Length: 270
Image 1 (cartoon, one colour):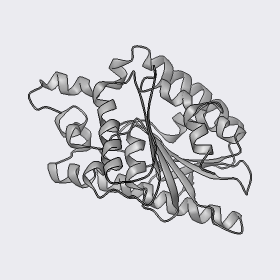
Image 2 (cartoon, helix red, strand yellow):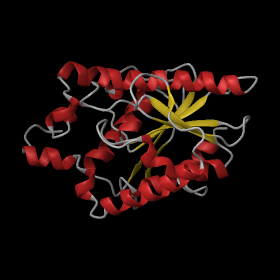
Image 3 (cartoon, one colour):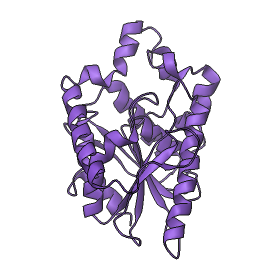
Image 4 (spheres, one colour):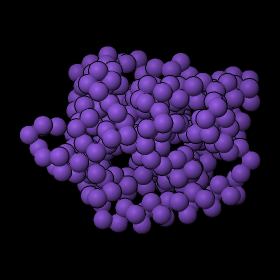
């Protein structure tokens, strides 16, 4: 992102809620659907992997021998919670896929190194739980949206992770330093570099599928487009799709339906 832009322009480049006029209504609807499902499936919620309340995950089983997908929520590493996104789970269960909704400590309580570590610790705990429930450990397909897409890329090298799907992710954190998001993130140049997947060696042994919406902010699209080019140049496996007419929020409809493009692509990996 050009530093010639005004602060307002830099802020607007990553202000998804401002860019989508009905975003508040979409998020409210997500919340209603999520709470209804959680209320009906309350037996495996908030499984702890650490001392912080957010260091926990929810597990929704489609059967002890089913594939397992872990989902990392978004909110620019500083907002929202795993419970807000449970609305995607019913379609996965219908498709025969178990889902773990990963929680993690948010900024400013946690810096980026702790946030990434939280996801790693959560995945290790989840892997142990899955292995305890069945004779073998089938591995976990990792997925995430927005900040969760970034965390998916960062944790792809965990041994229990088979591959990943990053949706509308953020792969270069340098622009985050120059807009409103850094008030809570507290990134400096070194930290932004260390936790930018596009500035790290490409992990070319595992698939990472990348999705973004054509109706998203230009800066958000650029994040995924440039990272897809980076991985292609490194001969790292995975597809890239810029989905027509979808914005930063409606793109999750493609995970919340058994006919959705993203859910179908994940299922095809099993």
